Image (tube, rainbow, N blue to C red):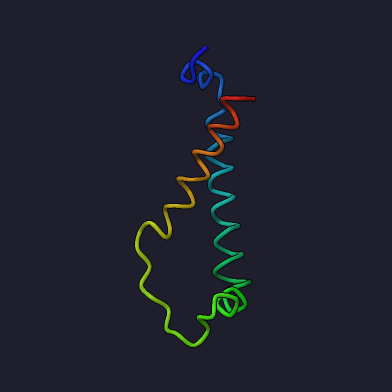
Length: 75
C-alpha cells in the first residue's frame, strides 16, 4: 500500500475543520491570551512588534494539515 491509496477514505471535511479549529485556537492562544508573557519570555517586551509575513499566518495551517494527513494515512 502506498500513501496515496491510504488517503482515499479520508474524511476531508473533518481534516479541514480540524485544521481551521487548531489554527484559530493557536492564534487566540499566542496572539491574544499569552502575547505579553510570551514576549517577556523571549526578552522582547520592549521592542516594537515587527510586520508579519504571510508565512506567519499560513505556516501553522500548512503544518497542521500535513500532520493531520500523516496521522490519517498511517493509522
